[in-house]
Image (cartoon, rainbow over all chains, first blue to last red; front, side, top):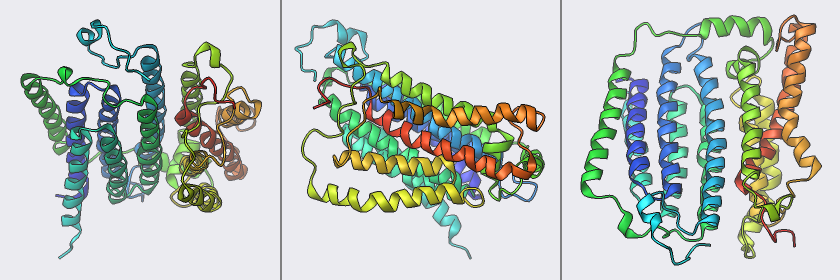
Amino acid sequence: MNPSVIAGLTGATLVGLGLYGFILHPHPLRKLLAFNLIGSGVFLVFGIVARRGAAAGFRFDPVPQAMVITGIVVAFAASAVAVALILRLSAANSDLSLDPDARAEPSDGEGP
Amino acid sequence: MSVLPYLDVGLALLVVAVAAWTVAARALFASVVSYVAYGLLLAFVWIRLYAPDVALTEAAVGGGVTGVLLITAGKRLGALHDIGPDVRPGVGLKLLTGVLAALVAGALASVILLLPDPPPSLAPEASAAIDSAGAGLGNPITAVLMSYRSFDTMLEKIVLVLAVAGVWSMTADEAWGRAPSPFRRSRPYAPTIFLAQMLAPIGTLIGIHVFWTGANAPGGAFQGGALLAAIWIITMMARLAEPPRVDARWLRMALVAGPAVFLVNGLTGEFVAGSFFAYPPSVAKPIILFIEAFMVLSIAVALPMLVAGPSSEGSDQ
């Protein structure tokens, strides 16, 4: 197996792991982390498209690589907005759970 | 016999193991630390894919700054135990989710194994466009970002500004216009201050170097800007600097400088070089470096503001 196939399979595994964590973790920050795992897995899959597209004297296709660089920065910006939303949610509501059943019970105000 | 294939497999297993720990760890803090390590390991994978530019970005933004963002957020939430053990998912749901995740990963993996041969590539088109318009840039990634696909890059800068606006819009009414709360409330330890004082001048130089060298070698505006942003965050963590008030005029000017200069140059290209975002070939490289310098400024200001969060009450004393 060449490095790009190994990296591609790694990316696929990361998407699976991230999806698992994203669905199962009740804590919103953990969900955000898992979502970032999915994102970097997708970038990696796109990265091997770049590696395979080596042509015109390059060892890679520069277009997907440039798009991944843009993507990493945009993913960070989106994460920062998500964190701000989560912190605002916790300030407005002492219960952080995204589970509607858990939210129905009155909380004893252990928020920040 | 080369040892590289074994290293590749070992690296892949390590990345997957650290990612699994990020998902499986019980404490949020352990999970975030694991994510930072994961970002750095992923940078090695990118180097193996001949993508040093992506590796630099992943290490600086994907691992480093995202890690600081999440650790700061975890601290501000104060309680990592907001969610009681009663809302933990049951075994059935775990099993079902596991099967779903495995199916998605398996489908992706099979697509990767069945990718078309010969692979499609935009490299020849990019190469032609770079030779005509991005004259004098030795780094094809920078040429694509700043010349062949410059519109994408400008929009991405605007996304950063929008994200800052989004974060600031979470401010409570009473706190509007004040500074974001400091990165740590308590007095920082002496080693933290020493580290910040040591790193600030060196890191600033390296950041500018990475930007400047990005025209011809791996590096560029994103990576250099992210390094400068990290330096500012470190000095704020050591309380050598405090986050600025969000209504400060210099801050807002610096935030919009990158996209604004980019847009003005793009419009000028319409009249001077015949099309939107075209540069006259004879002065393409100086123009690109000029735009990039303002992009570095905007990135170096936007990333710390995104990490610092909305302004808060009582942060002005």
